[in-house]
Every structure is written in C-alpha cells, then in structure tokens.
Length: 123
Image (cartoon, rainbow, N blue to C red; front, side, top):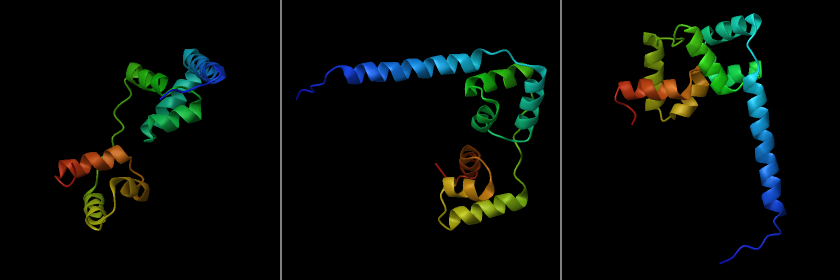
C-alpha cells in the first residue's frame, strides 16, 4: 500500500508545528512581574488547576508548574470532608463515573480517582 501526496501536506504540517513551537517559546520566556507572581499565588491557593491558571495568565502549563515549585507555594490540596466522602461513595455506587463525579462536585478527575483508589473502590 502506498500513499501518494504532493508534498504540500508535509510543508503545511511543518509550518503549523513551527508556529506552535514559536508560540510556546514566546509564552514561556517572558519574565515574571511581581503582579503576575501575586496573581499566580492567589489562583493556585484558590484551588485552580494548572491548566486553568495557564489560560488565565497566558503562560504555558510548564511555566506555571515551575514557578509554583520555585516559589514553594504551599500545597493547595483541599482535604475531603466526611460528607464529601459519603457523597462520593454514594455517587460512585449509583453508577456515576469518576469524570461525572468530578463535574458534579467541582473536584478534579484525578482527585476523585485518587480518593476512590484510597478507599479501594476504583482501580
């Protein structure tokens, strides 16, 4: 089986990849201002995920993660209350998936999966 193409597709793909790479480099290479550091700290402590902070601040996820680590901002993990655990078990027992539970509770998918695993309910 062969695939015939004019070569134009390869050039177009390369141009898209190059432009994405340049955009990524530009976004992550700008220096942090004091205002941005304050905003990052506030957003991180409020519980937003790296992906959401990245969009709000027009920075790469890697840049956000590195700055949080460099600044040693305290872990934002919010502990589950007893009522949240009861609700989590109830939703999972009623057939809801971790992704559906995530949307219903406002917790991240990974947080839901981790908590279910700790309780031995999910692989």
